Image: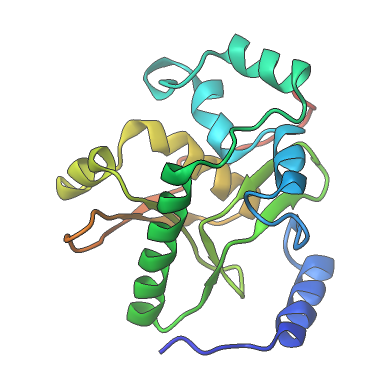
Length: 201
């Protein structure tokens, strides 16, 4: 059973690790879905932007030009949370709790920002308090159908690699789930060390 920690214990652990160990900051004030989070997310490159930047078969939502225009022209323009998005968040919460119960480890929905490259960001579905494990949860049929064949849908690969590049993790766990189905957990390794040296144009 995943143990509960007090807010002060979590805060002390985060403060110590942020100062000495991890390559990123945690933005506790940027609650996912809030107006602050939307502004913060759009003022940089998040994990959800990675498929578009990679292009090719990975980019199925928008072109690089459309992404750049949206970021530069509408700095606070993020999709308004609708009922479908709220349902997806609730489903992810349920899957995360099942995974916590199965692993005996707690995972947190933290927003991360690189210490040196402030534009490099990610909003995680879950990361362990010791920052040794991260999870990405998808609750849709495409993700599940790929997972049934032991594959991760191509459009999610860049997002997972982005998260690993930011967190310095060597692998990430991908959880696919559908209502009335058992979750499928797959692991993806870091393909190569991603080096960012300049601010994106």
